[in-house]
Length: 270
Image 1 (cartoon, helix red, strand yellow):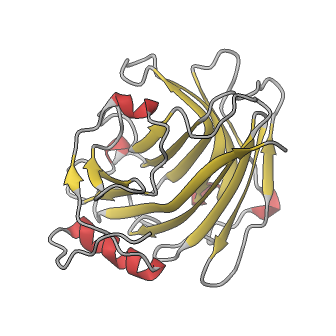
Image 2 (tube, one colour):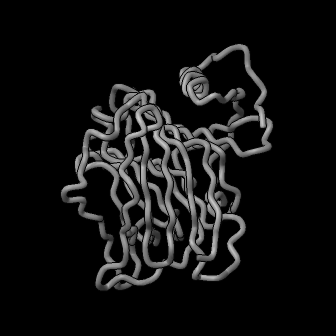
């Protein structure tokens, strides 16, 4: 599939997209604009790419999304609920081709690329949620999410599994301990990484590979711990989290771009 070419790049974010797209062998089009809407959670179509961009001047983060077959990408608000007190995220409660069998495993592949993210005041971590269910995001104090996945968190040692749980009765959020596998220097700006993951109802396996050098984390697995319960969601999420004093706004200088692209997901029965 080819995307229409655009002869001019009139905005900062588009120049950045074109630059990384060139490196990946893609050609991207100019975008339209749209408002974020909580109904996004009910869209089972997974985008081909999601780009989070910050100008670094205190302005809000934008989210550029392209769906396969669309005439052009669109620029959306930071998250479906349009809440600046929540982290920038692209969230959906369903993905296509799930049969309803809870023993099915969700698979996910994508490429990751960052500019001015790692090593800057905005960096905290990146989160990817699978088998996800998001609830009540528009009701302050009642927000809930239930998922498995992994985070890119260099301060905790690189890429590691996480059991996401907010307002899930009896379940606590749990992060994998890397121990000797910790490698905080693995992720760097201006490098393309291939990410692969499988998530079942009781665990997630994942690996990351530097596409330039071939260096890989190898497959790791983060499973159920005492007190955990199965995850039954069928959704997906890509989230960018910033620390204080940037808090959820991610508006500190310099600005940044975080690219999740060449995204594919589906289901299989083991």
